Amino acid sequence: GFVADQKAGVPLLNIKKILLPLDLQETALPVAVIRQAAALAHHFHSEILMLHVVKPLTYMASSDIARQLIEQAIASEQEKLKECLGPELDGSTVRRMVLKGDPAREILRTAHDEKIDLIVMPTHGYGAFERFLLGSVTAKVLHNSECPVWTDAHVEDVPGQQFAIRNILCAVDFSSHSPKTIRWAQDVATEFDAQLTLAHVTPGVEIYGPGGYHVLSEMKQELVSSATKQMAKIQQELGTKAKVFIGSGDVPKIMSQTAKETKADLLVVGCRSHAGRLGTTAYGIIRESHVPVLSV
Image (cartoon, rainbow, N blue to C red; front, side):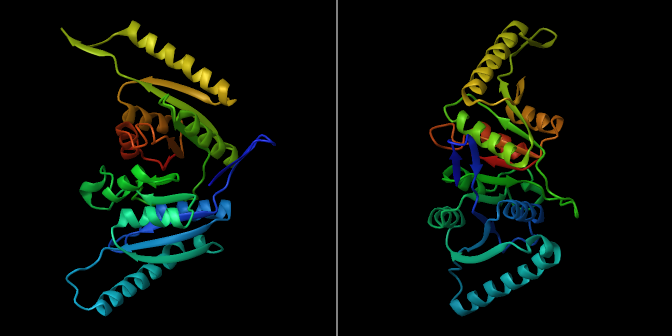
């Protein structure tokens, strides 16, 4: 889904197909997420593939009853969609697909078979306790997806608010995957004419002693200075000129705070840092974020 046109020196984001998995069992539609998928599809002239995965109902004797229930659920969801998102989905090509099986597995298989460029999905369900949990389906998709995944935790949708990308924050961990993450962030920034900030958070350097916590200021200075040098080197190699933020402490919390301070509309993270799996830090960042996250 990513085409870099090196000759002209203009990297292009080529997002032709967006996969939008929706859960028919949810009572509320993830309106904000659907709205973001619609805005992206509109911008890139992409097709949206809405995927419903139905867990096999083993106790249902008649498959006819099951089929009727699924059809009813889809019909009622289509009504809900028309009510709250009718105009936004207008002009977009939307296809629907209903599959039976394990949701995460079917989402990943469909993404692979359909050559999907971007998966857009909510981070979790809508229960009171699920606000800070990454849904297990989303976690599995983030772990194993071959293409970037756009997630958002926004349950509260602000009606009439246009989704726009003006400021982007990119989390940089200096892993071998970092250049790819930064390139993606840079290309999204170029595409939407947005301001890009690269952020790295060094470990917290406090020790607990008499009178409470003490920051080891020399050590902190050293870490920050080394990170600043690394960031300059990586920017030089990639030919980027983004703003830079270096912080120290709890990575997810500092990233979330920095996203607020830089008025970020989107946070880009590299989630293939640890042996090709979603690292715990990326997991934490996604879970804490109050803005959409693009995991590359």
